[in-house]
Image (cartoon, rainbow, N blue to C red; front, top):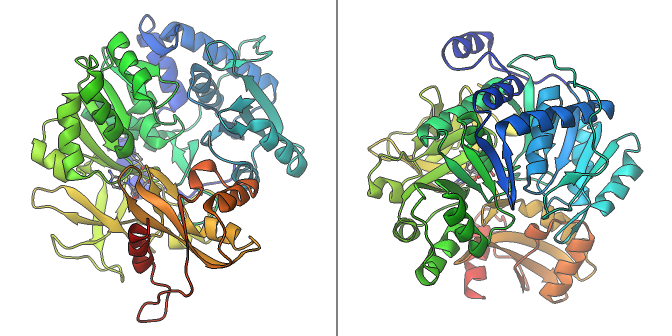
Length: 530
Ligand code: OOB
């Protein structure tokens, strides 16, 4: 792994004294397992794993991975569906001091190959097949471009949980603790251009993140967290997510799908106390509550975040779920804001909350980087003890993504309310937020102009009742069907969730006063031509 730009020596000294633990997440994991050894750590289907068993299985897995030549500092691509296997491999890698690159299950070959190159990954760990993704295709492409990358495949047998085929760690794994400023995981950015960027989260910063969120959401040994969103996403991994819940000795129940049928059953059966969803999913579940009448009495906290939550939806959700609602406005790059459990219903429904740390330095600035007066709408920029200072191997993304004085540009337009909470008003960055999935228009456009019938095209977000925003492509050229375009993009390697939902052919581009393509206008046209 290459070096990563960290905080200034003064900041490091201050954070080390006031904020951070001096341990690695690997050390901490071992401590949780010892402290909570008899508690149930994970549940998936009929399988229950105690902390004691988890520690032993992670050690076995770590030994196996070491036998496969994975070493401290190696970057390892990890592309697994939510499962006990995922959690085991994740902590095994972290225990070794290797750095998991957390790919989403839906990531296609093109992204995987590019990220393999960027991270100089030594290994790729995945499963054989899941839903519509054939991982063998990804593997054969990887082998072609990076023949030296080791491939480890987990098979998905046994109640669809992931069991490693041929997995047997023969000897005890060799453990040596690292520095709290080593990189613990590489997360993927929501991404505004093409391939996602790599986000280097250090042990110190990342554990501070999940520990603080665990405190704010009141996690303890009795907490039962239902994991629905992809485990590889920052929300479900550390806000408090799996890591925060395990750090408190609680239980993580792993759902196999996002369906409310399964979810309601799991909540009732395992007395789930907290779960996290994107707004679209929470809305769907809230509607289902009305006619399904599930037993949700154990539920204390419903976290909703990742995309804009409308006021009315927030009100309905709280009623339907009959528990506290918490809005979470965060980013994989660091900063997490959220409403607090003791906030009034009005604050929770109207705002996206406030930073989780007193040491987060947030500013709202105009286009020229000047601070704006209170109450004004501007871009949110931030630095602090768990926000990154650069992307890993970021190149010029490190210039555009951060201010010269080291603040991360969130790319969101926000305003601060009189009671000190943020409201997300819109975006500076070009990005489509489709049900919480962040999609770069440029990526779709670059691929689609290669289609024989399309001369030029622009992808824009269009307001959508179900998805929040849907992907609408405007094109100039010979009209073809949406299905044709989707097939073409899929064959070109675009991820399923990035496929356009709507296609509109127009004779000429609407332009702004300065002659740029008027994307706001296009978004409005997309709404009307549906
Ligand atoms: C979460 O992280 P990312 O990295 O996938 O996306 C971050 C972006 C934010 O910059 C913002 O544009 C949008 O997603 N966003 C929201 C939001 N939460 C995130 N926009 C409006 N309201 C919200 N509540 O999405 C993420 C990471 C950790 C926890 C929760 C979400």
